[in-house]
Image (tube, rainbow, N blue to C red; front, side, top):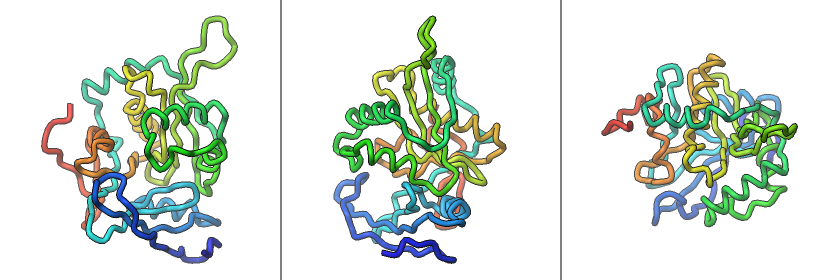
Length: 251
């Protein structure tokens, strides 16, 4: 397979495989390589067109008989946290967040492994090694950052506080794209997954960026249900990005 950068991206189609979200369904993906001088520009355009990035690959579903996967982006400027979200923000007001270049650490990998072992034992990433994790973080030809979230340091300690959450995030021309995030699942009262999304909305507003991209949502998939809590948001439909109208109040 040719992975060299060309003036126009080359797209490929994967073979059918079992769908990880809908039992009994098969999935296929169309993908291209994000390499070369135009990688950042292409990542912008493809993300706006419903693609997701994984390392130096941009992909999106191309299933023959199913269109259940919908790209989701939050309209950051219009977002207002509901009562539950305000409680999450208050519960995590003590956390310190720091933005770093896309470079992995042993501490990050340790937290990542604990997260996978607790939440995704049977997932496609369940057997990832330290090298696999390093590639996931470092193998990017676009503007990618790692955001660490830490507890306050222990009293009289010069060491930083415990690492409890990490987000791998792309900075786009029109928003922040949450590529992957993980956290300490023992701290369930903090709702760290929700908090990281809220923090990205705050960051997008501070940076003057209109959107936070959350990846795909599948109606009926329990693991993706949280994504439609952050309103207002848009879904990429056949007619383009369309404002989502929930059936019930998510608060």
